[in-house]
Image (tube, rainbow, N blue to C red; front, side):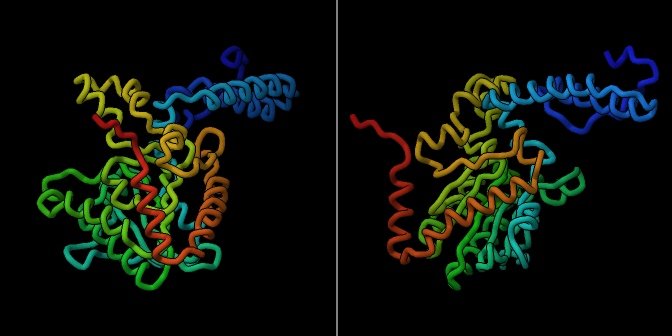
Length: 331
């Protein structure tokens, strides 16, 4: 094995990886060590590299073809997963960010503005997480305050006024639950967002790109088409929160995740989402450009039919869509 090859020095430790990916990451690291050693010593080790690469490909297929619900949640939370602004830069053109709720302040955890999607003017909104600790503190880890949701609603109402479609990219663990947020009416801001989105007379396409947590997601999640990325999740509560309430034990989160039925496949069965968008193998962070291209195609394909509908038909279909969700037992 590599550790027994004289002269091979271990490379720097790999970047962030999930627990279930460690066997694959370790093998890929070994392959790189052999390649480096072979190049330095001018030795032909192509057969050994080929054999290990085949093994790595097999492990990769086995891991990502049999992901559990909890593993998908871990991918949805990956720190390198593309954020709203990543997608804006790769999918849209001429993005102009707009700020403030006209009542209190601007909220950097909620980003919105004007842009073009394939040459068509649209309004884009969504939560924005940080890439590192400093940015996460600045953006409150992507958890909006009430002013963030009020800003989003202001921009959506503006879009409806001028006939621009709305693209909502959702990635939030939940609305910020702090005391100051509650003092400024967090519950009211979320509820108003849900109510007003239902009545906006312009096409709305919503995409759950990562985490879709409770009212924090729903407040910008009422649309004519609801899409989800393959490894995203959409739920009334986080698995950790569910496990803490049901069993007083947050460590049972993987068990709760299965019970919550929160993946795209589950929600397609419940007719809550309309389409699950495939991700590159291993998650959107493995190939953000390819993910953006796939997402752009899905956005355009889902938006175009909505543009042909008049306002009354659009609102009626949206209302009926949400009224049909869920199962009810009488008696």
